[in-house]
Image (cartoon, rainbow, N blue to C red; front, side, top):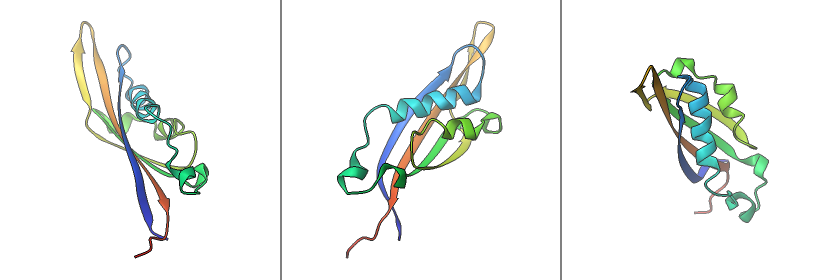
Length: 114
Protein backbone atom coordinates (compact mmCIF):
# COMPACT_ATOMS: atom_id res chain seq x y z
CA UNK A 1 0.00 0.00 0.00
CA UNK A 2 1.20 3.56 -0.62
CA UNK A 3 2.44 5.74 2.21
CA UNK A 4 -0.03 8.61 2.67
CA UNK A 5 0.75 11.66 4.77
CA UNK A 6 -1.97 12.64 7.25
CA UNK A 7 -0.34 15.36 9.38
CA UNK A 8 2.70 17.59 9.77
CA UNK A 9 3.82 19.16 13.03
CA UNK A 10 6.67 21.61 13.65
CA UNK A 11 8.54 22.43 16.84
CA UNK A 12 11.53 24.26 18.26
CA UNK A 13 13.84 23.33 21.12
CA UNK A 14 16.94 24.77 22.75
CA UNK A 15 19.82 23.89 25.00
CA UNK A 16 20.68 27.10 26.79
CA UNK A 17 23.80 26.06 28.68
CA UNK A 18 25.34 22.79 27.50
CA UNK A 19 25.54 23.22 23.72
CA UNK A 20 23.93 19.75 23.48
CA UNK A 21 22.58 19.14 19.95
CA UNK A 22 20.63 16.03 21.02
CA UNK A 23 18.95 17.77 23.97
CA UNK A 24 17.84 20.64 21.73
CA UNK A 25 16.61 18.16 19.09
CA UNK A 26 14.63 16.14 21.66
CA UNK A 27 13.03 19.32 22.96
CA UNK A 28 12.07 20.36 19.42
CA UNK A 29 10.40 16.98 18.83
CA UNK A 30 8.62 17.16 22.20
CA UNK A 31 7.39 20.65 21.31
CA UNK A 32 6.03 19.47 17.95
CA UNK A 33 4.36 16.33 19.29
CA UNK A 34 2.71 17.95 22.28
CA UNK A 35 0.92 20.74 20.44
CA UNK A 36 -2.09 18.45 20.01
CA UNK A 37 -3.25 14.87 20.23
CA UNK A 38 -3.12 13.17 16.84
CA UNK A 39 -6.50 11.47 16.65
CA UNK A 40 -6.51 11.29 12.86
CA UNK A 41 -5.39 7.65 12.77
CA UNK A 42 -8.05 6.25 15.09
CA UNK A 43 -10.64 8.45 13.33
CA UNK A 44 -9.90 6.51 10.11
CA UNK A 45 -9.68 3.17 11.90
CA UNK A 46 -5.87 2.93 11.99
CA UNK A 47 -4.18 1.85 15.22
CA UNK A 48 -1.63 4.29 16.62
CA UNK A 49 1.12 1.68 16.24
CA UNK A 50 0.53 1.79 12.46
CA UNK A 51 1.75 5.42 12.33
CA UNK A 52 4.81 6.06 10.20
CA UNK A 53 6.56 8.93 11.98
CA UNK A 54 9.28 10.69 9.99
CA UNK A 55 11.28 13.21 12.02
CA UNK A 56 13.64 15.71 10.43
CA UNK A 57 15.54 17.87 12.87
CA UNK A 58 17.75 20.79 11.90
CA UNK A 59 20.71 21.54 14.19
CA UNK A 60 24.05 23.30 13.73
CA UNK A 61 26.01 20.01 14.03
CA UNK A 62 23.89 17.09 12.73
CA UNK A 63 26.65 14.55 13.40
CA UNK A 64 26.42 15.25 17.13
CA UNK A 65 22.76 14.16 17.36
CA UNK A 66 21.91 10.82 18.96
CA UNK A 67 19.05 9.91 16.61
CA UNK A 68 17.96 6.97 18.79
CA UNK A 69 17.32 9.36 21.69
CA UNK A 70 15.39 11.68 19.38
CA UNK A 71 13.31 8.76 18.04
CA UNK A 72 12.44 7.76 21.62
CA UNK A 73 10.48 11.04 21.96
CA UNK A 74 7.74 9.60 19.71
CA UNK A 75 5.35 7.58 21.89
CA UNK A 76 4.27 5.10 19.18
CA UNK A 77 4.59 4.17 15.55
CA UNK A 78 7.51 3.28 13.32
CA UNK A 79 9.92 6.18 13.68
CA UNK A 80 12.71 7.39 11.41
CA UNK A 81 14.98 10.33 12.25
CA UNK A 82 17.20 12.44 10.02
CA UNK A 83 19.44 15.11 11.51
CA UNK A 84 20.26 17.84 9.00
CA UNK A 85 22.16 21.12 8.98
CA UNK A 86 19.95 23.88 10.34
CA UNK A 87 18.81 25.45 13.58
CA UNK A 88 21.17 28.00 15.11
CA UNK A 89 24.16 28.36 17.40
CA UNK A 90 23.88 31.72 19.12
CA UNK A 91 26.48 33.40 21.35
CA UNK A 92 25.58 33.80 25.02
CA UNK A 93 27.87 35.09 27.78
CA UNK A 94 30.53 32.35 27.97
CA UNK A 95 28.84 29.61 25.89
CA UNK A 96 26.46 29.22 22.97
CA UNK A 97 22.73 28.53 22.84
CA UNK A 98 21.82 25.69 20.48
CA UNK A 99 18.48 25.96 18.68
CA UNK A 100 16.91 22.97 16.92
CA UNK A 101 13.91 22.90 14.59
CA UNK A 102 11.87 19.75 14.00
CA UNK A 103 9.39 18.78 11.32
CA UNK A 104 7.41 15.64 11.98
CA UNK A 105 5.37 13.93 9.29
CA UNK A 106 2.77 11.34 10.29
CA UNK A 107 1.69 8.90 7.58
CA UNK A 108 -0.11 5.58 7.21
CA UNK A 109 0.07 2.88 4.56
CA UNK A 110 -3.33 3.19 2.88
CA UNK A 111 -5.02 2.29 -0.36
CA UNK A 112 -6.67 5.35 -1.86
CA UNK A 113 -9.77 4.80 -3.97
CA UNK A 114 -9.63 6.74 -7.22
